[in-house]
Image (cartoon, rainbow, N blue to C red; front, side, top):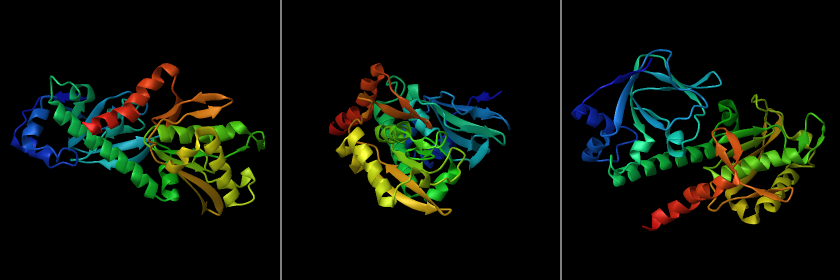
Length: 311
């Protein structure tokens, strides 16, 4: 079992935080105040910090040891001393989209998001600095995805910011055109726009196999892109197009449609069968919010940042 560790925030630990990739923008006095809510924990080889689909609101900093990110049983990258992880779920309280496991005995410092937002435990100005830095890191991740080659996105697999669809309008099971297949892609696009952005790759299946969009039967690439553009315009509104870039690329001798979505500046509703729905990303999935949850989400996602920016 993980072992909680008692520690004293001496000068060496203060310097470790101050020199790290996340807390460097705080002065040392601010870092000292942060230790009112910082805790430490030890994990032994084979133990998980968290697993995919766990609900967790903690942000971690590796002090000692070595851990790995895993998704679907595959190792994505190593985590070494000085690395931070857990930013996205820390911000939005969503589910974990990957697992983190210790491969060596590892000591981590961790921060509870509820403690960070408790003004009785930490000065609000420090909390605001950290939240803004975390938001910047997530935004940089989105921008890096936009610049990543389609081949590398496929190799990395689906995530919070990347999703695959086999076709745009052709049902491979019934072997005919299907508006529900179109709707599946539109839901993903709407969810990316209402969340933190992302990339949809059409012509790739869930197993990361390149199928191509040839089955969709478009006369040429321009016709394919125009078809999706018109669907977005008709079902979400013309203004949405300024946040969407559509391109067709060739990979492994097949055509893939790539749709890069930036976070929209206003809420995006998707019309289907004369009904409006509001979609967001929850980890690597697209979710329709129930009516009772739409207003609070819109308030926090679109309007509170504008109000805070004014003051």
